[in-house]
Amino acid sequence: MPDPGPGEVLVDVQACGVCHTDLHYRDGAVTDDFPFLLGHEAAGTVAAVGEGVTGLRAGDYVVLAWRAPCGACRSCRRGRPWYCFDSRNARRPMTLLDGTPLTNALGIGAFAEKTLVAAGQAVRIDPAARPEAAGLIGCGVMAGYGAAVHTGGVGRGDSVAVIGCGGVGAAAIAGACLNGAVKVIAIDIDDRKLDQAERFGATHTVNSRGTDPVEAVRELTNGFGVDVAIDAVGRPETFLQAFSMRDHAGTLVQVGVPSPGAQVELPLLDVFSRGGAIKPSWYGDCLPSRDFPFLVDQYLNGLLDLNAFVSGTVSLDDVEDAFAKMYRGDVLRSVVVL
Ligand SMILES: [Zn+2]
Ligand SMILES: [Zn+2]
Picture 1 (spheres, rainbow, N blue to C red):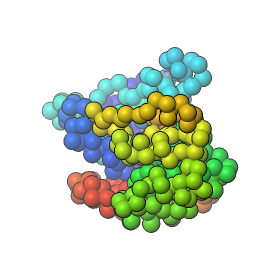
Picture 2 (picture 1 turned 90 degrees about the vertical axis):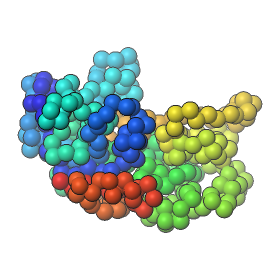
Picture 3 (picture 1 turned 135 degrees about the vertical axis):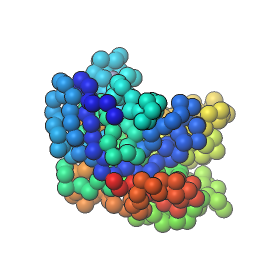
C-alpha cells in the first residue's frame, strides 16, 4: 500500500457492496489486467491525506466515487463535470506482497481494509448514515437514481417503466417516485424482484416471462406508452422493448451495461417518427460531490430507503458466496463489512 501521494487519500474501508460489475471484472469481461482488487461501493473513514489535499482530513466519513472530475478536460471546461472524460484515480497501484500491481475495479478496489484513491473520489457525507447503506450510493444506487432523474429527466406527473429490477432498476424506481412520477411500472422476469420493486414505490408490476411487456405497458397507459422507459438490463431485446413502450416524444434511457458484440436493428423511420430521445446513462450522469450528500440526506430524512437495498452483510471471506447469490438473483446487494 503506497503512502498517499499529492492529491490522494488513504481510506479505512468500513463496508463495500458486491456489485455486478465486480463479477464482470472477475470473469475477465471488463479487462484482462489480472490480478484485480475488486469492490467499488464503499463507505469508510479517511486514514491519511497526501500533500495538497484540501477539504478532507483524517477521520472524515466518506463514500467513494468512481468519477472524480479533473476540472481540466474539454467537458469539465464547458461546465459539464458529470461527463468528465479524464476522471482521476490514485496514480500508483496497490500491490501484492511480491510487488505484483493490482488493477482496482473502477479505480477503487475496496474489498480490502484500506484503499488508496484520488481525493476527488472521496466524498464527505453525514456520519449518521450507516456504512452498509451509504456505500451503495457509490455505484448502483447512484446509477439507477441518476438514470431516472438526471438522464431521463423524470418529473412531476410522468409515467415511467423500468426493465430489470435489481439494484440499479430499484434505485431508478425510487428516484422516479421521489421526483413526482405518478405511474411507475416495474418489469422483470423474477417475481421476487417485482415484490421488492413495490417496496421502492412501483405502482404496477409486469412479469415479462409470460407477458409481452410492451403490450402490458400500453394497457396500463391508455394505449399510449410511458414518458420515460429505462432499460436497466442492457440486452438487445430489453433495449427494443424500452424503445417501443414509449409514448410519442418519450425518452429511452439505457443504463444496463451491454455485453461486447451485442447489436440492435431499428427501423429508422420509427426512430424519427416517434421523436423523443435515446440516451445512455453513465453512472447516472452524476456529480458525486453534489449528489452523494444529497442522497444521504434523502436517506436520513426517510425519503430514500437505502436499507432496503442491503439484502445481507458478509465478511471479506464470503465474497464468492455473495457472487453466487447475486448470480442466482437471490439478493439486491450483499454488503461486505470490515
Ligand atoms: Zn474532466
Ligand atoms: Zn457497481
